[in-house]
Amino acid sequence: MGRLSRFNPAPGVKDFWTEFRRPQPYRIPILLASIAIPGAMLYMFASQETMVPPRSPDVTYITSFAPDRTDDEIIESNIENQLRKDERRERLEEIEARRRALYRELGRASGLDVDAMEAEAEAERIREEAEAEIERRERLDAAGLEEIE
Image (cartoon, rainbow, N blue to C red; front, side, top):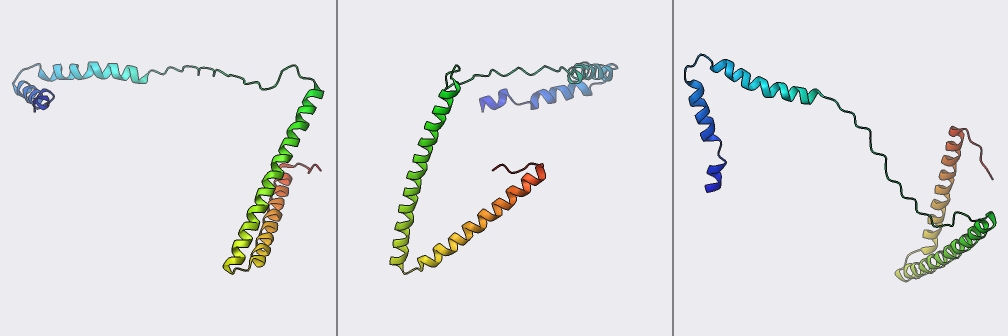
């Protein structure tokens, strides 16, 4: 309770009200002056506009290639990267094929018609690809671009 009495504003408000109620001829002008001075200062600070230009960002460039590479070196690294990408895609396709085979076996063991489910999934995939192609062509037409083959 000792802390509460230290920060309790009630005695201060009570003391102010006791002094303010006493009949003095200058109490209203003093009250107005004591409100006007901080009010004027707050108004001046609040109405002040200072536009600080934004600080330009510190850009750190990360270079992973030698800046003095020749075109032949660039082409060679692109070919190597494409080969790695193709190998990775082949491995992922093998994993997907193995996973589909396992699910096919599980479905057959569970008594499901796996062939019908695969045909339905293939039809849905073809439909989604066709819709994506139509949307792509509409976007190209809307942008006024021609298809590059």
